[in-house]
Image: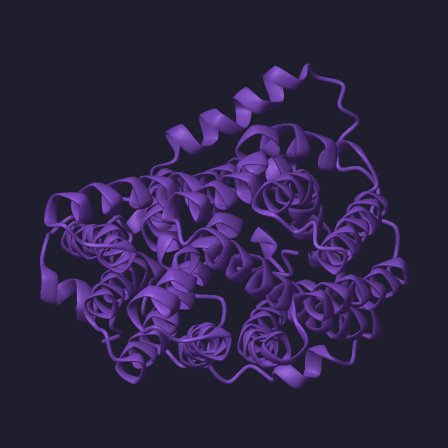
Length: 457
């Protein structure tokens, strides 16, 4: 379940990071609706991470195949590529709270089916892929509903704090869920993980049910293709939005294979068990929590069109080093660093989308970005698996070498792409226009890191 609270574009028009330092996060919790949703989302996010650990470990254990893990990624995330735009249109036409409740009920039922399937011995690779596909369809409609409903929970001026807190709960769950899952699965099996995930939906459904209705944003009077075309033209013609789309595609396609193939790193490279897999996932989550805290401490003048490429570069560097290591302790340290900079990149990219997008087309534009993000993930996983298998075959290696090479090449490309984008920056990401202070096309690597042109006099 996607539990990220997004920012309303009218919350800030200065083009700088909205999660500025010194904001009183605890003040947002005084809003009953937000507090309930935050707590419900925390429980559900822990359940989601636990289920993810169980499903991916079962697939890796039963097949030891990078291609099968890639196929699972296609089933889980591919529906967003196909259904993303229809879902975005529907979100603008219906009560978003009701739509969110429907999708949550559907995902709870799928989680329960998964628990039953594993309990009776039917959790085979085809069943895991089939249930992953059905859940992916529900997720395609759940994601834009969550993104457009959530900003109604707090006043406009407090949205930056709310974003930070929602990101915090998701990444705290990323720490707790995998670590807990590794211990529980090693002792009692995956059925318990899937059952706990099904039960975790109760809290978030109760929280969403208690919020105010979210009436449709549009009557849908225009033809759907005209409304979709309007969103496509916005992304195509707005330099900043187009560059944010590129950054999101790079992050999704080139970084996603690492987490998807992580079970094979654990079993085939480190020759370890479920508990180590949980620790590795928790390291990514711990890094993301630290990154979220640190992102809010960056100077308010340091712009996102510097943060994003720097974060892409550092994510790629730490992930590439991870792929070269065979010692679990050092590898976990690299994952912690990668999680740190991954959250810098992802948070800055999604904040930029919200700040640049007009409210009248929010659902449709978010649908396009969701399609890019969730569609690129399985594509990257499959291509990485194919490349790794081919390289390992040429070198006479097994599954361990295949996953190291396939993922390593992709993360190296991410490193190089981040460096290029840091040298040739795009100030329009911060909605800066020619003539504005800080709008400069002068390339430079060190200038990209320091952002000296934006430093106050």
